[in-house]
Length: 96
Image (cartoon, one colour):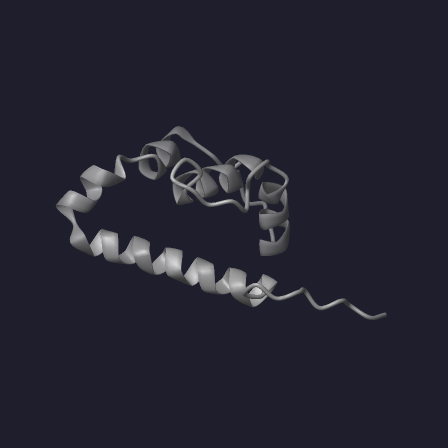
């Protein structure tokens, strides 16, 4: 890891090369999204794995606030997706 810097676009584009990166489901969730981003950029460690891959059902039982935060992040992600890709609309074609 060291002191090297990476810009957000590069960070995301490296993760986006993984299959199903942009698909969200019960088996391909935010935990795997974070893990994929970090792995793709050579930043994933055992310590991060222990934190990211926690049993969320257990976490949510202990902290209702964590459930609200997770729901909020998911809702924001959906809105960002709609902004970037449109909500059922065709993408705008870029002109030169």
